[in-house]
Length: 297
Image (cartoon, rainbow, N blue to C red):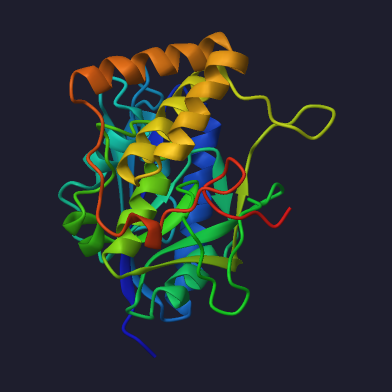
């Protein structure tokens, strides 16, 4: 059996309810206790970053979280600014000394076996990143049913080799502050020679809300950020054809938020603020039917 690993579990808040944080940290404690009994982890720390206008947690809340059994430390950083998720997670990762980082959304909580299953997956040194299966709404992207290899991993809940994270200088907060930071990081990680896995046995509940027809309506910010990030991905990964198709669609069919994203992209491009292309992009970048991986449904 491989040596047990240490993990920093980190989450970025923005106007979340205290109950979200309590639920996540309580679940993490249960996961840590189980994984420790299995001999898979030896230290689990939690670090919370808060981008909200006012602190979500007060001193009593933090003291309560520090009493959760199974955790070696709980830290809370109020950023006093909206850094967005990429920069928020980069900030939380600074100074970490653990073997791995578990990047997790605040509106999730894992099954008791979550950390153990992810730790088993990354025991293979060829693996740099392993994501959990989200329930009740699974992500539809494809993965190899035997190896777990997949195009990219969602940072709703993903375990990342910290040394690889440092080597790649973390998420690209300049070009992907809120959306597709996980897609870009996954592809850069794969270009470095490491694998990205989906781990179906590692289960996390993701509290997504849907309408009466089972669909999720994106917010204005999600629409804007998703469109801008798509154009940035096209530049970095050499897909001028996809960029041209995207621009044409926005111009003829896009919403006001799509058009705002296109205007911002053009402003950034004029100022040299778009990413440079990377070598061998076609070996990792996948643009399929408007998505960044083939989908199972």
